[in-house]
Figure (cartoon, rainbow, N blue to C red):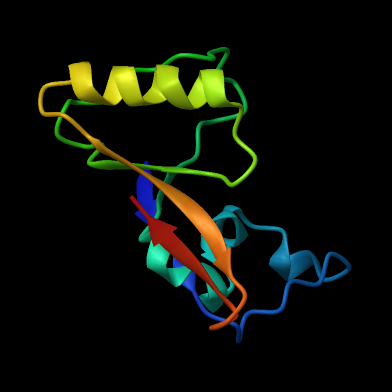
Length: 105
């Protein structure tokens, strides 16, 4: 099942609290990451992937991390262009001035 990530600093995970041991914590991130607009798909522990199919319209954008290998970036950009519909590929960079994560084309 796909769920929107919740960006909220009010959540404080405590691994000693058994009530926190739920899959819901897999959908929570700090507000610092809110510009990602991430949707996560959590597969069951019995899944023996690594591949699974998504309908073409589900993926609209790929955000690359700052330390991505250039060859892998090229391959991801090629895959994104070949898709129908195509997906945009952007990069995440830390903005030292505004002290936040910025998404750049």
